[in-house]
Image (tube, rainbow, N blue to C red):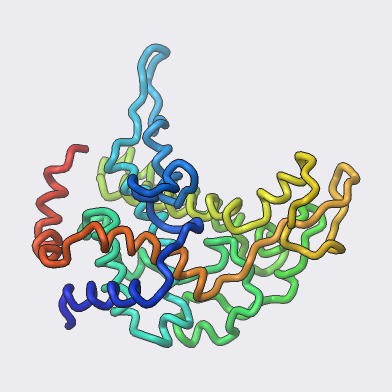
Amino acid sequence: MPSLLFWLLVIAFILAVLPTSAHAFGAGNLPSYGYLEDKAFRHGDIEDVLTELLKRTGGGLLKSGSKFKGLDVKRVYFGNWLRDYSQAVDVAGLKATSMQNILTICTVLGFLAHGFVTDEFEVTVERLGVYLPTEHIDNPKGYPDDARNYHPKLRGPVDPRELEIDLRTGMKNYIANEDGGWDTSKALIRRRLLECIEMGRRYRTSNVKADQYEAYRLLGTAMHTMEDFPAHSNFCELALVAMGHTQVFTHVGDQVRIRAPNGKTVAPLVTGTFGGDDFQHSLLGEAGDHISQSSISDLNDKMHSAKTKRSSECF
């Protein structure tokens, strides 16, 4: 099996030949030295808000609850991060290389992003999953009908009705219309949150830390899709129009309008399709940050000692 150094060199080569100046909304945190810090945000930056929230309230009026600590936030963000990197497990990626190669590369990048590769931070086939448009609220138009020939968990052929606008909500059917026979992003978020709650309740009964960590991961998974709603849609443009701005391109034709419940004629809420350029901008910006900050020469030793480091981390 190729060594870790080999895979790091492969990643470094990819970063050298593909565009890495990615300021779009994607994986990771913006570096503290970046000029866009506090001006633009990635998924990891949004997750940092958890440090200001209570994960459990106190038992009495004057008792304070416990907050999310740094490692808790990492565990939540790991679930979020996996959804971005699952985009590699798609028809194009599986045509180019094997599932094992994708898993190995994601493991290396996972260590660079989180500092751990074992236990709850291990990148497994089950945790990584596959690319699903519903997880990113992507428009499935044009998605290959034969995708499941490459992986059984990829989505099936697109029903043309998914691409229509739900006049009750003003959104495309694939976003939230659960009256058809297709999956939706709304249903997916609900399932993930219910799974998160179930794992949290199981932890309260079992006191098994693995159950708690799985609840954190599922929370991050659900948060990824919720964060993608304003990032991948024309929601912000529609909000600007609602505030009275007129010179705003809403990413649909001028004649594409529906009637809102208040009687006004408005543009529908839509999202874009997913392609190779989106994958590059979503992921390679973060990968470039970590590659430039890490020493390849001693990364093997660091990964070997990751388990020891984890046990000494302050919870």
